[in-house]
Image 1 (cartoon, rainbow, N blue to C red):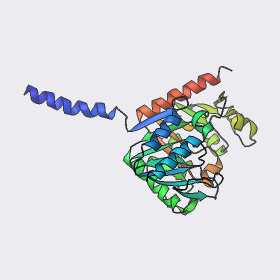
Image 2: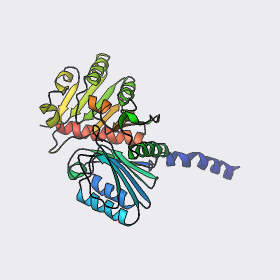
Image 3: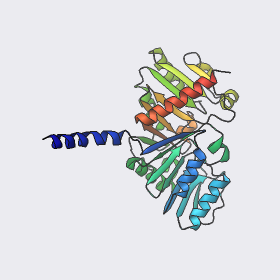
Length: 308
């Protein structure tokens, strides 16, 4: 009976350790090798690379993509027409309707790279950004279906809604409602790090949460929010703790942490254009590893912003 009991315990315990391993999703921020991990992600592709991103201007990234295409890897790219590419062995589709503001890659239908980072030198190395790399099947399927529609020339409202629970693509799916629905469950704290914040509907909803006792902490990019007449930071400072970043480059982050239990991030700035005009996405997770990484990142940025 004793050996059987030990086997029984192992059957119960091993899945717990596996579930806590979090190898299915890794998170990187500025200073943690975003560019190196991105180059590695591309270099490890064996059969295919599907890329949907606003801009690809980094020379090393372009060279790596060219090399993979020359090796026979199928490279397909959807990008904004403001940044034309020269990649003879790749198939490229340009979006000229609003902004192609997505930032994701799918390798071999097995791994997905996504977050707030463009494939530009400054975005990969200088700006405050995040990149997540995942092997989650549902997430891969969601990004692949979105890519397939984009690559076929379907942009904005011409795409079909996908209906995945952990991710929304705008404007065909309402990222705005997705965000507000999750914010409606906030009870204690909301942390926001955001490049552009001009959607006064979101600002108003945060005001309502504040009136209910929810502590709101908002960190925004100094340059954009101080120079734009559309920024809501002046009004928000009346009911929320608002700080301007002290980054030498941009605070290009786009995430919210709700009650230290949920993270929502992606390409989506808190602007009306992100909801109605641009190709964007918001990803939601309650994964404890990811949530803790974003909490620590926010608090590090927050503390630094209070020292000047």
